[in-house]
Image (cartoon, rainbow, N blue to C red; front, side, top):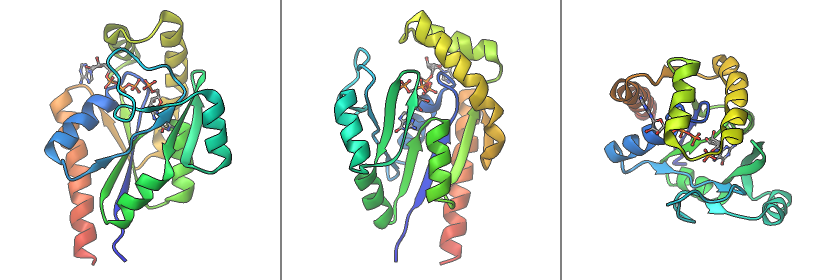
Length: 192
Ligand SMILES: Nc1ncnc2c1ncn2[C@@H]1O[C@H](COP(=O)(O)OP(=O)(O)OP(=O)(O)O)[C@@H](O)[C@H]1O
Ligand SMILES: Nc1nc2c(ncn2[C@@H]2O[C@H](COP(=O)(O)O)[C@@H](O)[C@H]2O)c(=O)[nH]1
């Protein structure tokens, strides 16, 4: 059977995961990025169904019960989850599927998809991470504090991942991630 490759991209909030993934998809439009569900309020400019599927807490909990998620987690006071069906469909079509998710969700994926390629994105320093979160100016001070606290726990777990990439220079980090994924793809096709 044709079976694709699941890729997990994790790292603390503000490290640049979303920026890197967007650029990666410009280079590889054939790869599929899973659109997550969340109970977080939409930020200015975010579009339902494109950036996230936005749900109420009650709706999300019903979907958890109905096993609609491949993984889900609570992060900084909100739920986040990967809708199961589109990811399974893309994998069955033999496609590369990227999940941009936090640590607890990544650990669930490790259990259910042990062959997923797991990449952790590190900041050059904690002060640079804080700077990026503040300059992004998308979250309140309280939310930024909460995310920085969580960042410490996430960074401490980076050794659980197959690859650790420091996002200092954006182009260098992008090249490194692309190289990991292209090498994985080439090795898979050699083994077919
Ligand atoms: N290498 C880099 N150097 C400097 N700034 C960067 C770099 N990579 C990303 N940024 C900036 O850092 C900010 C956070 O990036 P981004 O939103 O992609 O982070 P994220 O990890 O996806 O965050 P979240 O997990 O909260 O969605 C953005 O303003 C982005 O432009
Ligand atoms: N476990 C999951 N984590 C997810 C998912 N979608 C996004 N995320 C992560 O949540 C935080 C916060 O995101 P933000 O958009 O509010 O800044 C960040 O680390 C995301 O990677 C998901 O489906 N599952």
